[in-house]
Amino acid sequence: MAPRNSLAAAIAILGLTVACSTQASDVEKVPVGTDVQLTRQDGGVVAGKLTDKSESTVKVSTGKVTKEVPRKDIADVRVVDEKKPVELPPMAKFREFTVPADATLRLSIDTPLSSETAKVEDAVEGTLVNALTVDDVEVVPAGSTVRGTVTGVESSGKVKGRAMLALQFTTLIVRDERVPISARWSAQAESTKKNDAKKIGIGAGAGAIIGGIIGGGKGAATGAAVGGGAGTAMVLTSEGKPVVLSKGEAISTKLGDAIEVRVPVK
Image 1: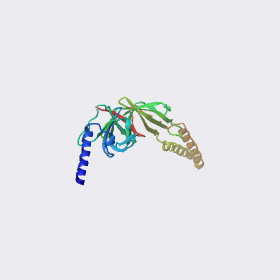
Image 2 (image 1 turned 180 degrees about the vertical axis):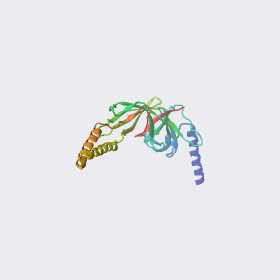
Image 3 (image 1 turned 120 degrees about the vertical axis):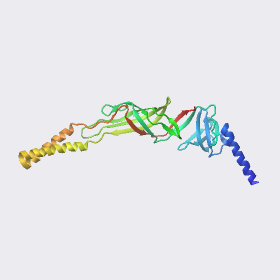
């Protein structure tokens, strides 16, 4: 009897799989651990492994992210069969994808900025150079617009303080849809300490030579002090390098949090 019961159970599961791959199924009849395709009432399609079911929600793992879908929002459930493509129901409008945190955004700057003139809250805009893909599907196409603001700025100072520019990107525009994002970028100007030291050293050395010629050892010491003072004055009156982002300049940043993106069903 046991073999017959096992065979009957296998046939029942096979029948469920075949039926669900072509038509809607009650999610209650689908075992946890099954690969499914859920379609929401709003036309959104979520595909992944069914990991949990409760009275009010079901959970579907889409890889790195687990999505929780309220049962009341589910319009259609289909079991995914790797050997046979799953049809989309007529109400399907878009597939839902999660772009993970730390995804790299390579941008081309559209808004020229300089630490000498920029102010906090100034708008900044860039163009995405690289497409973002999830499971080999292009989710965010290259050419998408990224917008944000200046969040920190320091102009180049004299001796103390290096120029700094900080940006935060908050909006990604994908196929006319605004997707909230969090991506930060900052840069600090190169240090000029070595050059400053050279300027001071040259001044002191030249003063010592001149002083030595004029008045011997004592003159050399005095000349060194005068030369050093001249070098210091030169550094004090010369500012460091600014941070400049020219139009078309390439920068890279990463998503601080995962984002949800809708890809229209073709």
